[in-house]
Image (cartoon, rainbow, N blue to C red; front, top):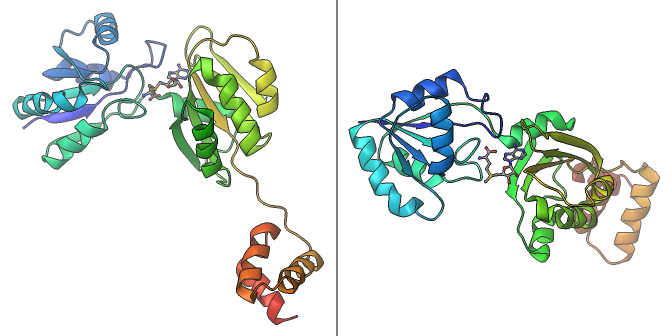
Length: 270
Ligand code: SAM
């Protein structure tokens, strides 16, 4: 019974492949590749002659059985077009099916655009949300952005260069003028890591933009903590409006930076 190896490949610079990845790609019986043409370039560069089969977005389900039977006979490595398989790339269904059928699944750490961009952005790295690609239509994109608007964690998005202006415009409208890092062509000759505000990015990237892009956006900031007098006045206004104590406390807690328990205590100590 074989093992499924999840093998990251470079996101630009061909030197960004680990020794373990090279040894694994050489040792397995079969490589399941999202893009066989790109795989051929990489494998020829590494002088690796392992057989390759295609596993891409539109054949991934019909290919499952074929790859699972190959696993029955020996080890298989999964690679995507670039970076880590399964991350905004095919892989999920195969990895799940292999786990369900009891195959060993071994992940190799390696290149991925999201983490490379995050750590270079200068924005907090302690907690983050990888949101993948935003929807292509503005209405849906704004809805997706509103869903993460209040999240305090740093937000990471993949974006196509021809949609950069539209995405930044929708970010400015929904998230406000937050800090952003725009990482373009990471690890490649024309690498650019631009840091500033969303409004500033709209100006900087006003012309034609080429290449691959990751957007790293600051999470929501802590709401300002109101002074006690202001909290009491807001509570009174809610109660005068006819709101019950619990409802008033919840609403005022939401806008004042106080937690609900603290606001309750104010009501009871009025
Ligand atoms: N699996 C890949 C990974 O681990 O990063 C992501 C694949 S996804 C189909 C491709 C997107 O990743 C691009 O549209 C871009 O947003 C981002 N990306 C990939 N390579 C990049 C690079 N060298 N520089 C900036 N962004 C990159």
